[in-house]
Length: 189
Image 1 (cartoon, rainbow, N blue to C red):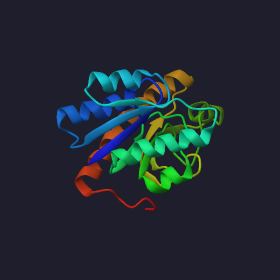
Image 2: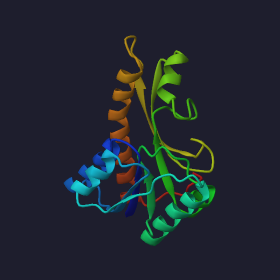
Image 3: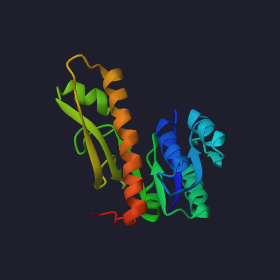
């Protein structure tokens, strides 16, 4: 399976995929890691010998949308994997390229950029991580897999998010492994 990774931050999710590939657990080819920022994710991918591309957000969003579309189209991946990519992808992008995302909550609960904070504010006893298809909405695509994380009484946003990240890294690797064994499921399942 040929994948493109999209990342904006530290690259810990990307690193978990790279490590699983390097250990032989994942039989994938990582074609490129694309980032909208000069991020640690780019450094991690480069260190692993993976091609990288920096596509900073532009004032004219439509130009950026076209740039990322054309970049991914040339790579011709089987799957695009958003791993901490903090940009909304255009409807034309997600309708053309099968794209999955990880989210630090049990969707449909707590969509958006502040899922961990929102779960704590709501007094949730359990939250977790979701891998889902990306569609034109914000965290509204069909759920592929989820894992729960108990909210502990002493949790704050940082401690809870760190525990969710551990589960999130495991879940994305397990999901990709399932795809390599069983093939890509249809996006609306």
